[in-house]
Length: 129
Image (cartoon, rainbow, N blue to C red; front, side, top):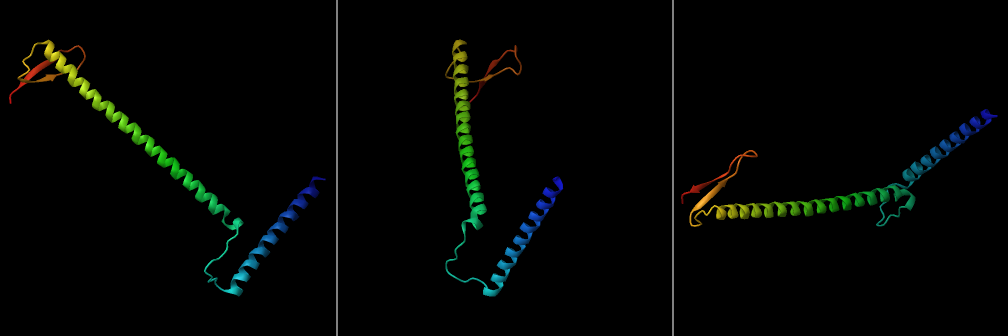
C-alpha cells in the first residue's frame, strides 16, 4: 500500500512541475508576441507584488525600530552627560567646603590635589596668578 502513495505523490509533483513549465512558457510567449509594454499605467496583480510589499513593510518596521533605538540612546546619553556634569559640580562644591573647613584664604587660588590611592593624604597647592 505505501508504494501507491509514493507513486501518486511523484505523479502529482510531476504534474505540478509540468503545469508550472506550461505557465512559464505561456508568459514568455505572450511577452514575445506582444512586445514591450509601453502604456502609461501598467497594472500589476497583488499576487505578483505581495512579496515585495511585505518586504517593504518589514524594512519600514526595521527603520522605525532603529530610529526609536537611536532616540532612546540619545536620551540615555544626555542623561549620563547631565549626571557627569552635576557630579563635577558637586565635587567642586565638596572641595570648596574642605577649603573653608581648613580656613584657607578665599582671595588666593588653590588647587586640591587628590590622592592616587585610598588612604593617602590630599593637599592644597597655591596657584600664583
